[in-house]
Image 1 (cartoon, rainbow, N blue to C red):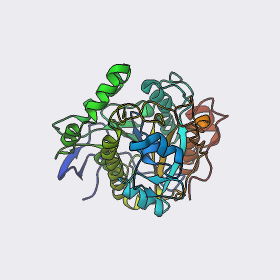
Image 2 (tube, one colour):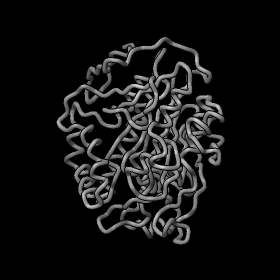
Image 3 (tube, rainbow, N blue to C red):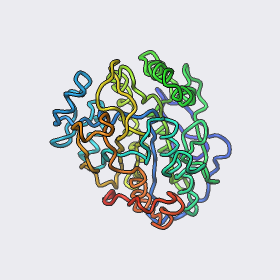
Length: 383
């Protein structure tokens, strides 16, 4: 069924008709400087544990510190790292050189507040209060005849500041509104005691079961919707998807078993949804920071520093690791407790925008990521 900007069909536990919000009109098709390239940013809110997604299985320090939480039977990528067993499609992409993990990466922020770290990641500056708009919104504004779309109930900070960015969310009744959980998360995250309680509730098996029922709209469906919205003549070239439930203070193994399955299904859905445009698409999966190296007393991990990002797409020079791995010895850890961040997330974003979307270096350093001349764009991301 051909896609229009007003109406399209996507499977959500069965075929469901989703209607775009009014105001997301179809602009005229236009040529692009980089062969109609697409960029989809997927933000995992709550601080996803990169050491659980990409365990350094060959490092004895990892198994000593993680003990029972250490990932078993990972999908090996090389002699040092493996993917979590639930990331089977991501493993396939890695084999096709269409997946590129970026190690020990974080925004230029070294405290442990969800609020501040997410603001820093989304506004594209070195400070949580560094800008009131977002780097993706500034990117859309800097690129003539380019539009952006966020699969979100409200405009995320990342895309604010652009007159050519819209939001879309499904007008579907759910037994549990995922959007409500996403809106409540930052409120609870501000309270040290309530944050852990809320994370437990969101990651409870009963909640996952409700969200997975027919009519539910989770990360796989959101990524599929973004791909549908971003394909075809005149469609947005820049997209944003967000997902919550990644704050795993308790029972991390079970919670991430489910969440990684959703992320992997989302990558599969995006690959299918983009179709032939996959060759011109980059999907960037990011989170606000990492988690502690050692396990806490409740089978989870706490707020950390260095995290993990994933690049996926047909034009990615994948099938390898990227980043400066700092090691896991006690002296190598940040504050003696978590993976040290060695790469600024802005360097990754600059590398993608510069090569993939053709944004000039001057525009990247002054408008999109202001005052960032000292942050050099990562090289060699694209094939």
